[in-house]
Length: 223
Image 1 (tube, rainbow, N blue to C red):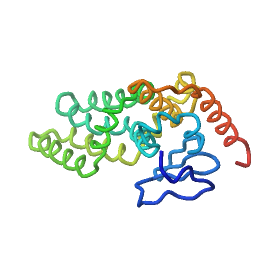
Image 2: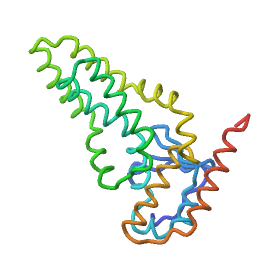
Image 3: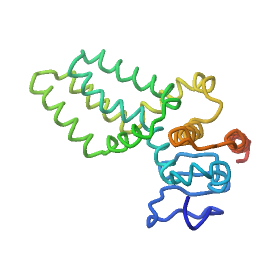
Image 4: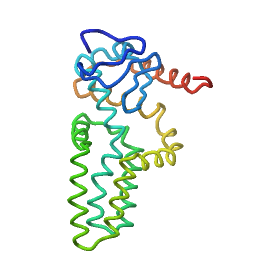
């Protein structure tokens, strides 16, 4: 929890305090376009003990990294699949990992894994990794694998796979989770932090209800 207390209106957080989200009347909105249907002041009300242990900035950062993790894992695994499998099987394995993690990842959150995934999101590291593996594949004459690798890198980096997978899996996601994925992941991290530190979060159901109400309001015509 910050010393300055909850923010109001649509005042953007400043770079000076390391924040990357805006607290609006409709919830927290990140610079990457993620929308969490909960206000900062509501988090401070419903999860006071958790925010005393882990700041809201860290929780939002972990949740954001986790929501991008299907893309991150797929980016790092595709070159390995291309090295060990045929190009077609490699592409299929990558899509399989992406789809399975999109479905089950929100229920498997981990503080340690979120930190690791944050490092794996480094664009320069990803680019150097692809240059190294694809150069080795080109030297061995695996031209089709190189084409698949480049195509996969572009499709993943520009979120084309993310959008296609979420569209295809939308019915399954709605059956599996009662909340929108951003809210589901943020709630899961609140629970994980509380369990790891044996902290009480008695008002978690009330917070989830607020999230659902705000999500419903945002989907009404004119909003």
